[in-house]
Length: 467
Image (tube, rainbow, N blue to C red; front, side, top):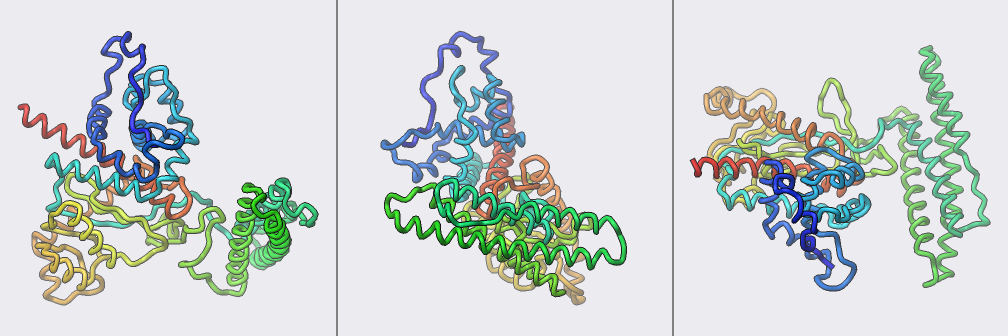
């Protein structure tokens, strides 16, 4: 059952002085914005209006997620800080002395509603900004970045050791739950760790034979992983037969564990194939390369940074306006080309705001003639995107005009906007696995960022009117 707000205030709120119950300036502005019923509508499709167990109040959930991403808090730290702060409890619409939602409740609800609801919340905020007439779209700039996945630096040997360990742990859980208890499966974790330590010693040796020793040790780990995967496949097959015989009486927990074991087997086989390809002297294809057992959608991405030549995660595109409000963002798997991403993003901005930007600018990665032509067909008056390669004399003259250069200089601010999102709103690393998790995480970061920006613009406009 959907519950949108908390019950009546507690007795404590009638006793305490009014000064203690006030909100800080920023929280008061954000609270006023989140009072709009449009922020509650996206959750209605996920709950029955009258039947079922009551949800936590959506007002509370939205405000706690804002605090989480505004101050980069973990779920447990967030709940503890809200419990200890009167102003944060007031902001989150929790009666003084009332119960703060449990961290796992927030985690489950965030996963349950998915990225679509977060997108609707961002659109509702932009609509609210347009209603207050503080959303400017006359100039738009675009840039891309990498949002790192929550993975360690992936090596073939490291992934193989983790795969062997995960297979052994999952087999134990399946058999503890009563599945395939008579199927023998050898635990190869000690053997894998021993070979991993030997590989580390070889790398520290810095001798001419180190490369051959590393290749030999990696091949041994691949063989161990193959045998571990074969044992796991027997366990999964026998447990699946057991579930089939049980029929409706089958254990749901056992069914989930068997499915998890089968998923791990498939990913282990892919890691083994990647390792064999590399040992054969070839480079695995980056578009399909698996860099994590728990985050299969993360990919290696090369963006040309000197400090990080290869990053592992997701590609993100950000469009913002002169006020710093993020008008559109997109999280993608792999490293697609920049140019095809710009026009659809501008079209989404036009669809949301019903206004065509006067000027659009981006870096050289977007510089293709087809992009300029399509944007001009959308009635964009000024397109300032440097072309790739060596342009002709006419194009060079156009790129040296004063309006073009002014827009290109303004575009460099998009790098600062992305840096701000990474340092202040969690875009440096997504803590949720999978492409859906990355979109949820980054969407909440954009929502918190835009709430601060839009609320400040609304307050500034009201002050100007009052003056």
